Image 1: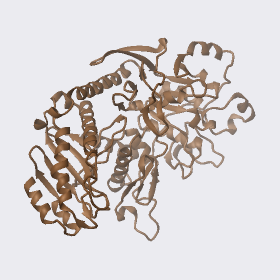
Image 2: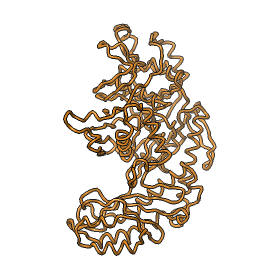
Image 3: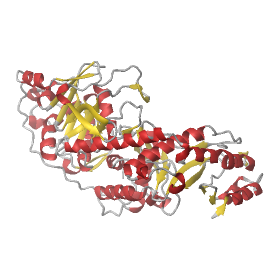
Image 4: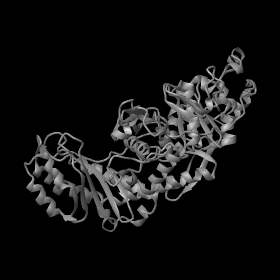
Length: 569
């Protein structure tokens, strides 16, 4: 390994040379308290910036061992360090001048959720921080003094103020670690207490706006109905109380703009931990919970939707159903079956974003259209079986159909953002409006027969397949990505909260297509393998001998399944 003086000498020797001479800087250099690695050098000042990493030994960094003793504390510590490093680097970005991206110092910008990212990783021996720097140039001529400023003036300050315990706010970091451990404790209690979710008293659920995840100022704090209030003794905060959402079928009702969807949105993101000050720090949902909705035009391949759809007029087999352009009801049926396959134990649905004919058929419609003429078995008639026979709970927001009151175990009315338990009163009222017998077909768990094909369907006759062309991934924000020539649309996966999760899904799918599609492995086998590799090795198994880049966040197994299911393989 070379020293920082070697880097300085090489840097000065290439001043005013053509931009490709920057490639000679690639390698690792020992500075006083850390190792700087130049992992990838951009081709020109207008290209994607260069990949840089900094390694600090845990012994030198000095963080208490209790702060990185397990996955929970390591993720929390990494998240804290990434946020601190972002703040430090943001003070210096573009202070070095030049063309294009010259002077850029780019660090992952974390949102309200705490995610495991490649931006910061803690091993048994060291802290690894990954980020991007735009190597300065005038036109395409190297401007070495400006890069010298970044590497020898700006960066050492950022590293010293972020990655050494003696220089950070120890009290703030302690609270960050304690919060993560308290959140993990609540999540463990959900299983023990047969709950699907917990919402603490005093939580702030409304967001600032539709495009902001920050808490709304002067909003109504959450307060649990007395009948659903549970208390827990957290390891650090102590006693906390709030609403425990029991397993089974929970119905959320109320007038428009009273907070029904706000509560559901908080629950769907409760699968992640949130930072202090978010308002939803103690809104914790079963980690496998899956938000479902209809998706007109969705691609579906080889899904057993017979649980909900049978006896189609065109005689198409719904035990192994495929379509390039699904209807709303078909897409939602497929989404539920795919969720079962992904191991989800809680389904979250909003009537507003669901296909009406999939959710319910009222008595009058059943009189007009006979059962044998309707191929759809509505969700209303399957929700009870899903819980009693498959152990899958449902949390449903309803605003128009009263039929769901009959199947609900718990009924919450949102009244000006205050939840009211109206289960008992509503059940008495249900007796006056009985449901007609459903006559639904017998419940049978769907069977997966799906195998990922070897070549992409985008390959055309007479042309090389994407597999031969070497697949590339181009990310379009949170909404999806382009893999080779295929667009993978993730707009309706509402539990993806960060672009870096989408980027990671793109790389996982790319790896699967290039290495795992042998025509024998089933989709569940592939996803389970990838999830296991992620948990045990991180993103290193995707690097294939190269460096791990910044810009990826670990997705849940539910999002991996959902992404693969939308790939037109």
